[in-house]
Length: 236
Image (cartoon, rainbow, N blue to C red; front, side, top):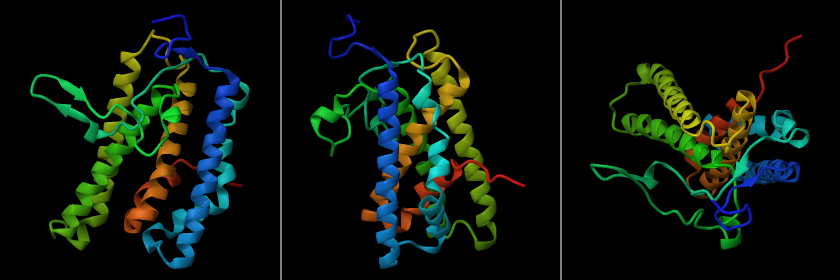
């Protein structure tokens, strides 16, 4: 447990730390916008991703405004050492128990960055994004193998979204219940969700950049997740 200064000891949130999270988000948005612009010039963005790419390029400020509360209100939460690269492939079932592997953090990040203490919600966000990918991959594979006909695709996509939402709800509810009283995450429900959402967004933006560089046809998957986090348009 330590005194708050040991390498593994929890440390309280500060406004300075919260503002650094916002700056991380801004940097991720700008970098992703640049990558989308490059991809647009080379024709690497397919039709499925075009509208979502335009949304992020043109209305990113609206998305950033969602998280402005982090700048002004200190959350009652703590930072700890986290896994840092948690997804479903890092969780193994032995037949008797669950084992987490590859706990060294994001492989491409320098060691100093991997050891930075973060909210444990960063790992929850990684699992949320992993569930989304799992659902999309299942549908993608079934379509490629001819198991889903053209006339059924839209309905299957609706079912996939419902499944993903249910898995996310089950995960988040169970996690919140499991850490209740530990002081690791905000006690206010809205603040919990806001903090989780910012980590989900940063992860999804990273995925957009990764896919554009490695599998451009899949960039529509995380781009869709980013678009879903935009506030609804204001009606007059």
